[in-house]
Length: 55
Image (cartoon, rainbow, N blue to C red; front, side, top):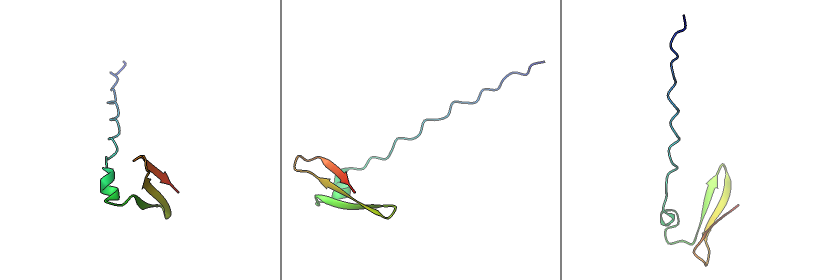
């Protein structure tokens, strides 16, 4: 006889990424260096008040 199928519950969606306010990262500076896996990246605020991340 066939046994009743057991359904697996649907996987949960991943949690949303954390949100950080740019002022927390930058403070009063217009530019910070972020080190990721030994590489340096520069996060800076442009004259138009946008953020740019460069290596």
